[in-house]
Image (cartoon, rainbow, N blue to C red):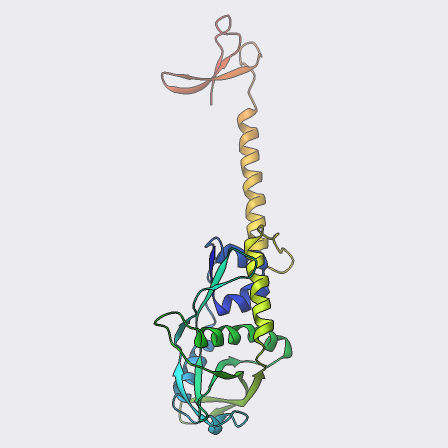
Length: 272
């Protein structure tokens, strides 16, 4: 089986719930869509536009000198086989920005708004490695940029609010570069584990950590309770109003009705 692996699914969905990851990638059943809060999308879009064609040393001194050349472009890797498996995979997603460094190599960067942490850097590492793989080993006709020598996150952490012109407010804060060390071996091992998960049985629901697993469990319980009560209601037969014997459901000229089991000795009936 060939799996389409999205960099964001390898990051957020895989980390959040293994069951939901398998349901989406293998069975095409995604979680209900929850839009990213609009303000974060706006901030990210403004950053991408602003830094386009900017020199890296002007906003990110830790990076080697270069120029931001590419923003928000789709990438797709060639299909790769998995050792010891009949399955294969390819990467398909859209990066934030890529800078072309003066030495001819490339730096892949993602914009983030918030407080950087070591845990989030480890998780986002998968996303950046996936972009690097797709850029260096693309499918036919896809964007090809190689070699990718730097990976990292540009964290914007607002800490000051200023009022400039009338009705114009500005948020200011630190812009911090979080370097992600390139480790293709570790990333491929992670991919092999993810594909092994996809090839196996559906993982159990993660009720403790996944909102959607809890939601679907509750819906399932409610549905079973409803069907059980409906089934029980159908199996409860009323007594005959004339002799008190059990009754049977029958169909007549005017539809279904209850008829005494002692018919024709007793002709007691009830409406359903």
